[in-house]
Image 1: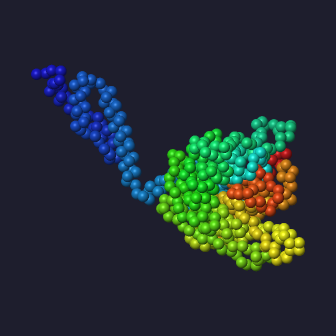
Image 2 (image 1 turned 180 degrees about the vertical axis):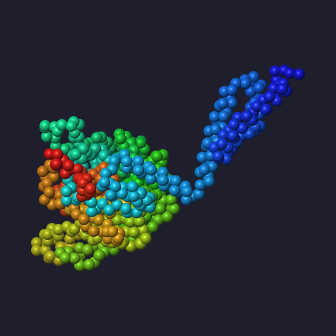
Length: 578
């Protein structure tokens, strides 16, 4: 008896005999190609049920069979690819990934074009070596010998503010903080050869305008001390001591004497979040390279870790016995900090929750010409730190010593004493109230502190500053066991752009930098924060006159000689056209 819910037996038999036909065709095609079929679907239960459903619904169209065939073919191809990947060994997989990486590098090189000079330098091999060295966290760039320090240009910029306490650079922008609660964003000018590009084939009749050198003030933000009791106020209410900018240009962080850590939106300087976890002044900030993980140090003797992607606090690191004055970090999840008068530098391994302690306090007692032996003071406070790579870092102290440290040793590998010289001795009448003072009463001249220190990550370049008016450039030796003096960026007798003679006047409170062009081929831009006072206090250095503002140094790269007729200098081509 048949009804709407039953199917005649003849129809069922006809459907069962016709079902296996499409798989047979695929099987024959696979045999003709000479390959074994990966997976051949047979008349499974799901297929029979699907046919029954079709017969019940009364639809016998051929479109459903065609769609089923296409889906099964796609699944066969995917299964074959997966089986190929599953069948390869670890060595084959590494080889496949290496070949893919080489193809990507070749495409990147071909986009920029190449000539005989590029082939001679073997750019692909050089790129591979640099990438491997950076992943291992080792020094791989020898830049000190390629910087034309004697040809560096200098530009002073300022606004009507107090002493500039810190500075951070994220190309092409500069961020500065001041003691009178200003946070300012500046935009650096392009290099002169890039400011006025020629748009026509004909040479212009008028001479080009002089290049702009001073950074342009984009935007600024100012706090006030009157809101110190307002907990909802999202700006600083006391001196701003530190600033840092993320490498992706998304976040800017500032820390001040009001115990606040404020996170800003970098393009607009709009406050996003205010953290009040620190119990004393925030003295240093550092971003983990390539991420938005932030490290902060404070006078409350702690180091804190923050995640700015979630705008959240992560953890606190304890260990210092005195206030922590500076901190630095690179790509790995670790940071190094210095603890002022506990005279220790500590390397924090955040993931392992461990720390390495490096104790200072050493002094070089070797006799030096024209130096009073009593001036070689012991290290009293370790104030500044900067990482060279994951194994080496340098520190600066109040006795003027520049120390090189290795994570493999507890004592410094090398110490450069009196890196920025010694102040002039006091006059006997200034040292004593007597009418005829005894010369023995005059204290020995003291070395100048190292008030700022910065390195180019994974390279051999180190920059230091004090109140002697110079930014000194140091080079890490090839054996990584010594620091050698390379030169100064502001030599005596120079004239600034505004006509003021002499070197930098004031205290160098901070240094930041970024490289121009692809992998620094257009040179190095160094920005310096200068003030009439030290960033942490109102101690008056021997410099009687100082200027509050910033200085931009443009250091060109030494052009390589011509290879196979291709000149490596763009200036020579311009002179020939003239």
